[in-house]
Length: 262
Image (cartoon, rainbow, N blue to C red; front, top):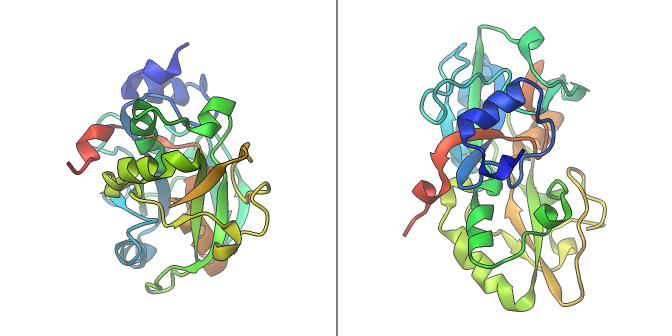
């Protein structure tokens, strides 16, 4: 099946039925994808404040009502409990499960946050004639925990996580220009060049996702990543939090072009 051209509703149904279980880069091309964070309502205000104070890694696309499972604004007819290929369940900051649905874990006092994802600007990068290496290689995007600290909000604090895409030196400015138009899905990169400058010790060994080839003459370019909340969760250790598994995103009905600033 050509998942790249599948519309979001059909893609979510395919995921819900277990027909698609892989990372979602390149699928439902032209539609925005989202990171997911689900937590108890008593943590929701602090987390919303954390997102507002750290909009580069945590741009909010939608906040669901308490106990709601449908993303009515960005994906009518969806079910947040089943429509992601793989989830992560954290208890006291420890990863305890990576299920294909979270029906057994669901609680009526959960609040779900959908955050912008950089997969959403990959179609524009491709349309601009730029190669997106992890899509070419059929891999998950590489993600790294940096030494850049988020601004604290309530009990939430932690390091910024970044995703990386390499480009030939001549294409770096174009990549910056293309992605700068999409602040709702992380926007412009936060670092270009030397990984060590942001605390990355081994670019070939990402903490999340898969390594990709960096060819001679190419420069690594780093964008803030919506897996940043997972790093905060591991540091703060709430009783129970559920997220997407890195690279396994929620497909929305929002056109990526509608998120662009002209």
